[in-house]
Structure formats: C-alpha cells, structure tokens
Amino acid sequence: MATYEGKVFTEEQEALVVKSWTVMKKNAAELGLKFFLKIFEIAPSAKKLFSFLRDSNVPLEQNTKLKPHAMSVFVMTCESAVQLRKAGKVTVRESNLKKLGATHFKYGVVDEHFEVTKFALLETIKEAVPDMWSDEMKNAWGEAYDRLVTAIKIEMKACSLAA
Ligand code: ISQ
Image (cartoon, rainbow, N blue to C red; front, side):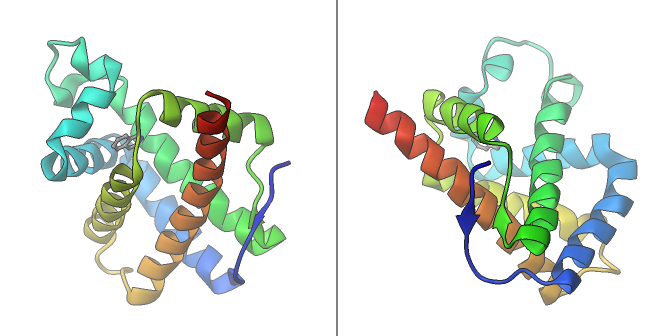
C-alpha cells in the first residue's frame, strides 16, 4: 500500500462526503456531464488531453467515455475520505496509484488542471445537494481531493524522474 500521511480527517468529515455522494450517485450521468462541462468551460484546452474527445465527432453530451471518467474522480475522492478517516492517510492500492500517476504524467496533466478540477468538483457538489451544502462539507470534499491529488502527484514525480 502507498501511504501519504497528513492532518486528521474526522468521522464527521467522512460522513459529510459519504452522505452527499449517496444522494448524488443516483444522478450520476447528469452529474458527470455537468462536472466535465464546468472543467472545459474554465479550461477549454483541457479537452485536448482526452484522446476520446480529440478523436471524436460526437457531441460532449453523448460521449460515453466521459461519464465513467467523471465518476472515477467522485468515487476515488469519496474512497479517499473513508481511507483518511480509517487510516489517517490515502491508502489507494499502490498499483492503482502508479497507474493513475503514469496516465496523468503521460497526458501532460499539470497543477492547473488539478486546481480547475477541484473547483469544478466542489461547484458540481454544491449545485447537486444545495440543501446539504455547508463550509464543512466543502472542506471535507476539498481535503479528501487534495490528499488524493498529493498521492497522485508523488507518483507523477516518480515518472518524471524515471523519464
Ligand atoms: C483528468 N482527469 C480528470 C479531470 C481532468 C481535468 C483536466 C485535465 C485532465 C483531467
């Protein structure tokens, strides 16, 4: 297991992430599309990083690969919240993390993309569960995302040193 430690992630924070995801996942398709439309609205050039968008004439709304990709961001961030509370660190399987690091490195993902994605993720959640939304919920999702990204970036750095 890869382990990346940091500050304490509480049971309340985990509960905020899990309970909002439980509601949101019922609407996963619409949510995933909204999330990516936000990313591309802020950073249109990010589209070029996705081969399945670059080589396709299908409108974004009908692209079948977008939804699973968007979902993996939500699911992995949610899983990170659970791991952070249980273990105090992101414990994504090392092989998965290496693969994620290698893919993001290969396609040229940079800090700005991670920042835009964080903003789009938090905005999408805020709009999906407006009645539940609070600063505490924003911080819980934001912290889980940041810690996951730190773990991915460590693997990306390892790729860059090996290149
Ligand atoms: C990769 N995965 C999720 C979101 C992204 C946004 C911009 C660039 C690359 C990405």
